[in-house]
Image (cartoon, rainbow, N blue to C red; front, side):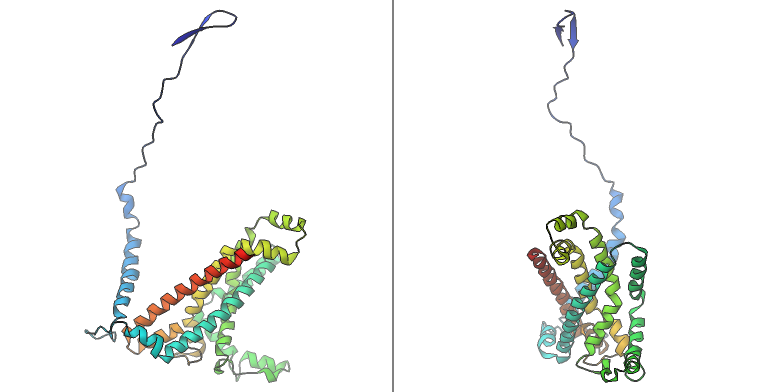
Length: 319
């Protein structure tokens, strides 16, 4: 302690100095009870049993000629992969159909989903009702949608040809799914009708997160509607666009039940895609070969999604 004199009273005043601290007091780290580590075990066990182990077994069977039920099989190395990519015209045809289907659906479905979102982004009563109407097809099952559009496209009594005839456009009637050259285009139209409203909601969520101040600043700079979309809207909805494109890509590769509902099983070569081709290979008791096709299928989806994400990033940077 030290004693000081007041400037006027001359009275001794005692001041207390805080004790010297050699360092900051460290908090002890929070201890997690060992029982907390037991909570994720059920989910981990289910993932291992129903996902990781079958995945590893698929890699094993892809190197064999196993027929799916015989107790014995022979290892053939990478012959199944070579056969699928170079010696199987049915597989390469399905791959070509799937890529055409993918390109059409990704471009058209993303465009219409974004267009609907831009038109219905405001939370008015009419917009909410229209959102529900456009979203409604997404709650239907793929098989039900396939059967509905199968009858719409029927060349004899389907609604498409009947409507064209009644409005005087009978010359535009066609066989639709029966035309090998355009069959996948008509399937793509159904896919867009099925899911555009669903992906519209993703774009609406992205649009509603854009700060209004950015548009006000663009207006002060003299930017028009298109310039605002190019410089503000499109870069700001990049995460939503990536989700939509990736989800659409997976949908296009997994349109198995939609195609079987529309054209039956097995589909013709004009409507055959990778998922239906792999199913047919399994059904023909070529389990090892089908496992190899499945691995190629999985790797292809991953490659396409990665390429799409990088292309979207470059597009957003350019704007």
